[in-house]
Image 1 (tube, chains in turn purple, cyan):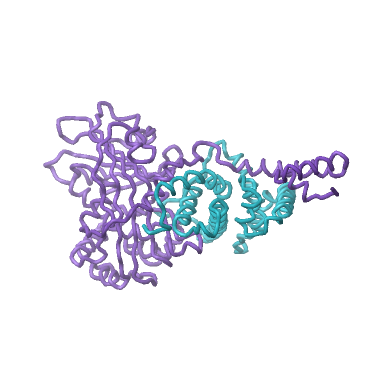
Image 2 (cartoon, each protein chain N blue to C red):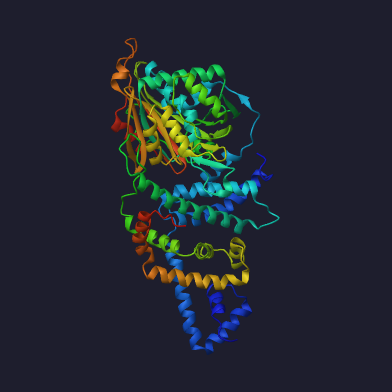
Length: 403
Length: 191
């Protein structure tokens, strides 16, 4: 054999046949030049391997669980069921549940929550990323990675309620349930919930003293489709007194939202039924949203901000600063609720609370309650901790105690 | 779901057999669990829907799709960074994106980013051949993934390794930070 650098390269990468290797070995024994070349090639290959290995996932926070990944995947591909029309009310309830569910929330808080939920349909249209790849243009799939909040005023909230009424009456953009949510399945422990849900379910370690488990169940989430027609939407917005909103040029199409398994735990400190201290923990695979081809999330985001009442110049400027590809923006009615950004074990999240005043002024026939919510996302799972009569620091402690 | 007419158990086997490897190579490129997980979902969804078993062996096909998605993601991120810089930070109620993890892992992350920047300086084909080969693909699989003749893989790989080492040793990864900043100012997007 003659000196051949390519063969030495193959030798280092162990791609030669046994005979090929033997021939190189024989040549190396007799050729000092090739021995030196081999050492150089081997050293280089190993240096490259080391540098690339430094890029490997290291800590558990960087590793992905194939079972969670597959559960997420299956939520896409699950057999679609015949289309069943549901009312807007049930759709609103579905979204409200994850934001402010409580067996007996005050009327005004419920109103605020509905204000949030009404726009949830629009949120889902715009909160997600465009396809990352041209090949995937026919298939735009998005997931929530972070949450942000934006304040809206009362007058706008009233208009949004009017919008809700109009939508309900006209049956426009009514959601179609392509897969009904399953019945809640009761579970006894985190381990049992993990098995039922297909992802690692976490249980809070730090609960208020005396808290008892009232509910622990796993529910298969629905898959919902909303068909929309931009012209109809424009006329409905005008009908609700929301004027001057510019829709980006787009054709009629459908948006799909697929909600995977949802796990809920409810804890309560019994106190004779009057305004108990209660905690509800909801965990779900980050909902998957499919947009029609060609939809521009930034342009839709701008429309969304206009619908929330931002002047068009502000909507334009702010929409450009948001990564609509991964952020779910939650409208917060001014005066009723406030929010701030927090970190849960270093993961960014959103803390929202009902204003004390709003709660206290809502009627004297009921005891005062104070509601708060923490929302965050980690590893493809969306977490929400909802508390009643729990201080913000306690809320954060509960959120951080999930394990 | 019509998809590629998959039997569920069959696809689950395929998913579980290849997920870890695909996730790892994606993580090497994008450096974030979230992004790597999302991209892995897209890789397998694409496989579920459009992979043609009669035309391509699955493993190199999956890696090819992963390469394309991850390289596009990295390019898009650079563009987004440019756009966000231009827009500037505006004081609003809208939350900022999460800060990078301010822990002791910063030094390691800088080293990683230097390696990624070195990869960025190479022609994409060279970077991809390194990533594929060092992900454990055989020459034949690398050839299939990159659509080159198998006999050329050794030579291409040797060239890529030499280019990578030279670029890294000369500090391309570190130097390109300044270059990237300069590029941002000029409004170029890079590839």
